[in-house]
Length: 485
Image (cartoon, rainbow, N blue to C red):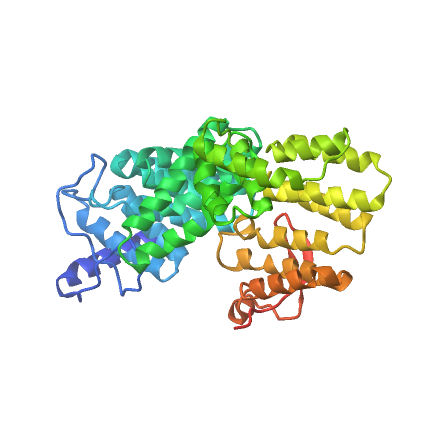
């Protein structure tokens, strides 16, 4: 049957029966299972865009609206699309209070994009999706932050291969600018990731990244403090497991965080473990790295403790790159320390010394400069210089175990599977070096509970004991295992 004839018959039938139609569940912004959507109550529109209110085709638009939304709920996107087109043509802004015709239009074009085979069609659908959100912004400017966020979210997760990171970043940024310190929860994790990527590629200035890093932290705090129930709070808890840990990686950029940041984070640790010289030296270095002035009272306390009790325990070396490396490390000059320890590794002929200071460099990259790939490179070099030492594999395992937020959202499958290669490294460490077995066993016990569950493995049609490659930056072959309660 011709679609227009079919549609006309539906309209006639619906118009005749609407008075005796059963009541249905009212539409909400959340995903729910309902029999069919209820047409919004006719009220005065809040938009200047074309609506079905007082439109000569109002009844027809409302009927198409009901039909296409019901088809979407049932997953029949091909059936929904032509019905949506008719509703959209008559009343792009629906009843003037709902934005469904724009957001549903974006959803329908995204479905077509996912099934498109040629590049021209993909580009066309991407442009259509953008146009839907642009029109929504024009018709409902009060919701512009949400539309920019949804557009950037789709671009990041669904068709990032066709849109530049700069475009995605700018759309997220517009959303953040309109919301201030109370960003939409769904924007926080992807915006954090793309912002860090562009910063590390020198495509955005550090001052800009510092500003939005602050907004991200404030938005998470606001979301957690103001959510009212489990449904509202759980998304913020997931965000809170990811974004702050990713932002910690920026500690490796000198000057990104100020003295106040490092004091807030590390002075508690100093107060709790001030008798431990390793902790004292670490806190001193972090405050120095953060640019704390010499007359800062907290910094003065840490320095006094270090100078009185810890410096005498540091071995004194003859002048040269090794001595300079230690001097730089003690003063929180981590790049300088790496450069000089590297020089020493190059010039010494002692393989055990090469191994020791290659591992020192790896630890600096891991703990201070937050560069995991560089840390692994130097740990591997250390293992080559001294194949009997298990410490390099302990460190590589820690690098992998710390990569949950880097390789996934902080929770769930992608963030859990990093435990597999981590545990592999710790098992390797204790096989070759009994001295590290206690630490290796402690780490294995601690992280085994974070492996994926049997249910998650089976849902992905995988089998325990089968081979698996963990990708992200890790790129390691491993074995599938389930967490044990």
